[in-house]
Amino acid sequence: MLSSAMIVTTVAVTDLEASGAFLRDRVGLTLLEEGPFAWRFASEGGGQLSVRKGQPNVGQTVAHFEVDDLDAVMRDLQTRGVTFEEYETPKTVNFVAQIGPARGAWFRDLDGNVFGLREGPVPGR
Image (cartoon, rainbow, N blue to C red):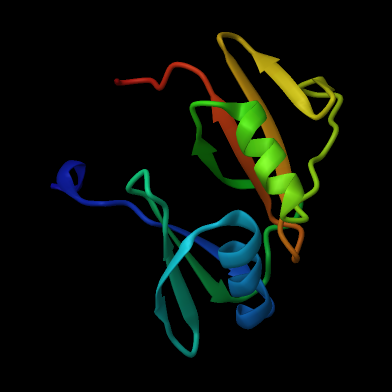
């Protein structure tokens, strides 16, 4: 039954307005709905992300974006004030990790939730 349903990632944040501005202005997502307890955003790729008031899941990747050109997306986000993380596992060099046939990079939102970018073959496509 659920295989034909759209799945929406929900991320807990402490301040809806600040997180909403970050996702809209820095990450570039489109605001679809603004409620008192949660806001929902869309990406042009068809995915949706909901943020709700709650305790953030700091330090864990909560969602990632599949991108065609990792370097270009990173440059764009950096011009918007997004900073990327360096890691030992997987090892990043200039903020980018090679993971099999894919490349990845990670950034944090205002609450410390980690979002990833992934460039490479998408499983199932």
